[in-house]
Image (cartoon, rainbow over all chains, first blue to last red; front, top):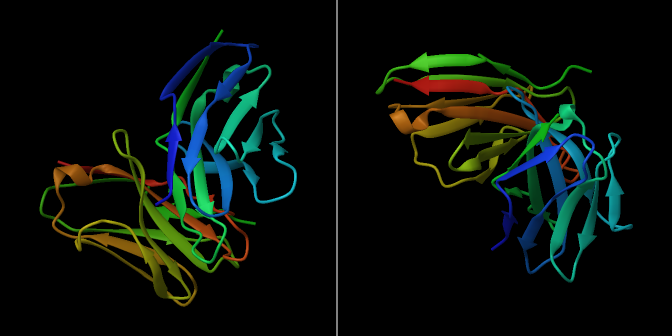
Length: 114
Length: 113
């Protein structure tokens, strides 16, 4: 069965510091990978996704994630964070076949401090 | 285009009551999924509807049910509420041809007292 592990439940960082939110998955088949962000009192928003092609994917607000098939990882990175990046980040995986139900990690709470 | 609309935003119910939550998907999206979000359990999948048919179901008791109407709007119902049902209930709509292209609503915060 597929599963997703977000290795850090909380990540505190200072503003303008780099950050990495780690995500590992287990699956015996080809997968699609996603990062979603949830700001306080809001629903989830898609941040970026890997479907195929280049293993490095980027979002419009400076985040990037790299699909590493051998390590079954999809870590999220940003070279310099802002206060406004404070949010909950969720990694998710879906079977690339017909059943595309998303399997979710438990989330990582990113707290950016001044 | 309008996003996913969930109503109501907040709800307080007492144990034993039942509740119905509503979700209006993005226009053109035929699939609606429901999730329960709690601090301890994270996001847990409840069910997914596509063209008025339940396509996937999570591991929740039969007290949790849902349906989808011909206009793709969806409702979920929880009967005989328990304290542990207190959670944020999120609805997400998608077009199944787009992998992982879920758009979430802001959720309904249910508190059971």
